[in-house]
Figure 1 (cartoon, rainbow, N blue to C red):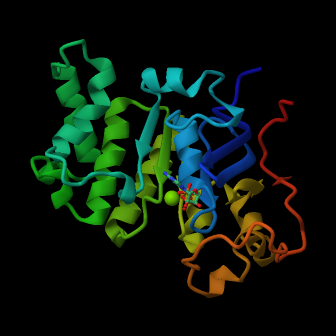
Figure 2 (cartoon, rainbow, N blue to C red):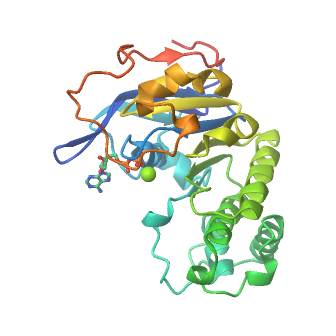
Length: 275
Ligand SMILES: Nc1ncnc2c1ncn2[C@@H]1O[C@H](COP(=O)(O)OP(=O)(O)O)[C@@H](O)[C@H]1O
Ligand SMILES: [Mg+2]
């Protein structure tokens, strides 16, 4: 039986005293688009970094197509669109340079781009509709254009998995529509996609499945089910579909669970049981 695209098993991560992930588990099959939702501080970015192999978990394990994240990354399989806060926008790189970074794994020791590298970069720039901005310094783009530049990096890389950390935050409608369309195209080509978002209304059109995160995976299933008010209340503590998202830290760990439903994982995803 083939391995899942992403396997996260009982992963715990601390930053000093802060518990960011608490025995989180998630299985995602190839070519699925999975939406990751949870309030600020619920561990979404940490989960991405653990899957990327940028953070080593204190406990548990992560496998990408049955391999270690380090190996998967080295093979160029994982494209990553970081949240804006994690990027140094002053860095003296043009948009084209950023996309060319996706080709590093294809280049030799000298990192001299080949004709094929250049062609792949131009094609990726065209797909995200950024060709005319290719020479601009990356920080001189709008929020949505910056996100598209990183999506282009993943495309140029030939990534079979894309991790997108809040790609719609502070993004114009055109960029959101372009990114959504591209993700659909990539998934139909076999790319596995994990995407965190606060845009709950767009979730059913965007994703095949959704995950509710609050240090652990509270629920995993079809977007319509995950978006049920009683399920959102587990992760957000209120009816977020009718109100602005809370922009505050997690409740005290010892505070009572607002739903009374406890913290058991509810897994309604349709991946084949592999346990
Ligand atoms: N580098 C860090 N050092 C210390 N604490 C951190 C660091 N990164 C994240 N945290 C903390 O870990 C928790 C989870 O953060 P994060 O994964 O960024 O959540 P999210 O992306 O859902 O907002 C939060 O309490 C956050 O303050
Ligand atoms: Mg984050």
